[in-house]
Image (tube, rainbow over all chains, first blue to last red; front, side, top):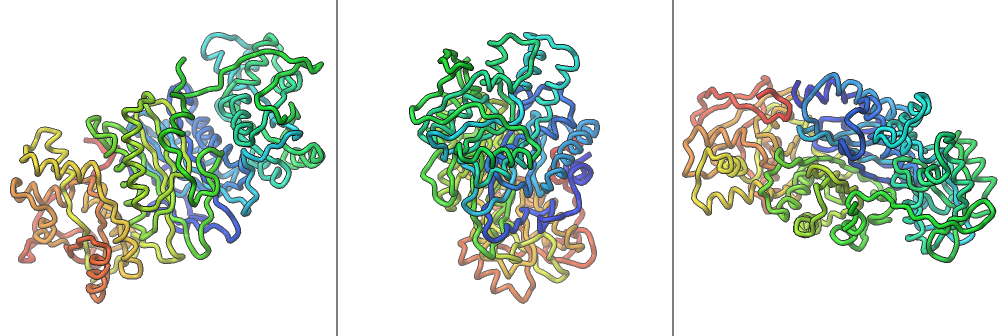
Length: 318
Length: 318
């Protein structure tokens, strides 16, 4: 199977919004008038972002999901993506399920594969995703204000649970592990929630490196601090099998969650709950933005607790 | 040096057309009304697309150049790009010249780095580039018609000369090798020529896998064939040190050239020459499009010659 056969067999489909389709030097997109184009790139490397044991179907899903999650954090509607793929070899047994997982999620979000590149090399997947958002309505990291509520969507820490089982530091009942593994290998990008939060949320980010680390980016760009109610946050991970400390660690600094953290004025609580209901996504209020910089953790009674967690950094010293 | 320091130190610059700049979940682009956005992705893997011996400055240049070359082949004006980078380690001695080479070429084309991703992994560079072209004016692969002239820009085969020296199958005088090596490691994307050919060329492609292979894509999408005057083509490579057969092979199937192959009606010869002069790019007429499929090679007297060359394919069996 050659490079062009590979593209034809697994990735080529009838063209929709790309004026050209795969097969010219460039894809041509025609954004609608009044819309801004939101663009994000993520690269996934075997052994860093996924384990060699991952089902290729799930990997195809995950590779696009982590990119759609960036669009969600901007409140953008997915339009299209490019795929650059380095593969050790061209194997149908891998390409068929990978492309199926990728394109199933793409179809679910009406997001068209418009171009890309294939080459031989260590397994690496680089997707660049395009979405649209009405001019000036994108959710940014810089808009959080003191007094705003802090929310998180879905659940946190499940991907980390699965990772720790793979690492051998944790054992879980089979069905708990399987559920956690699906969350790690097939995260759900919160696209509908992000779009529903336009005009409501003052800031948003997707949580990929852990809540504390990613919230830190919002606080840095918003020149603010935050208080987190750890009791409320801990309820984002139902884990009868974990002690309280480890549960809180995985919630606050688990990694690979692809949930949204966002802020909204207290006056918008009903609007936030409507956005959550309309998008079919659970959201939980876990704290508040403060003027004083830094993140303060408090227990259910409001008493400060001391913990230090590392945010994930690909190049930090161990 | 952590992931965010690395981005701040080497890749962050004052924002121009990206509404957000590096540091939010997405970059936001606002294409002008009436413009289509041309998008292309290329991934470069160490050992496949560049040798470990390459100067990082030149590699930074090349990684963007091969993407700009795709915009050139569409006649698009560069606007912006994203960079996803997998690195074995974060070394200033590598990152500083790499980012300098990358951003020097970006500045020369007023093409802004608007986002991306950095991760640890085998050295891999994935760039997605964005350009704009007036609605309906993009140069496509599908527009070549029987009777059109066939042109090639610049020179062909120089990158292959340098590669063969690295492979040890060829030795060249030092200054000839150095010139060939610069062509391999710092190709010149023919952006100005591509833009100047809007409304003149009937089809275009950039030559990355060899003239015959890439011309084949034009012929396939245009349902046509071509005749190539091998004497005219061979003059694209001045190589006193090569025998005629090898010279022709490197011209027709050298690889890594990043020149444009394009077609235009015979009535547009003056317009083609003006476009070449105005963009400061040499172009040479090397053949003609024919109705009959396939590529016919002829010598200077019009007599058919028989040669078979392989086009580069990352997954073809050796």
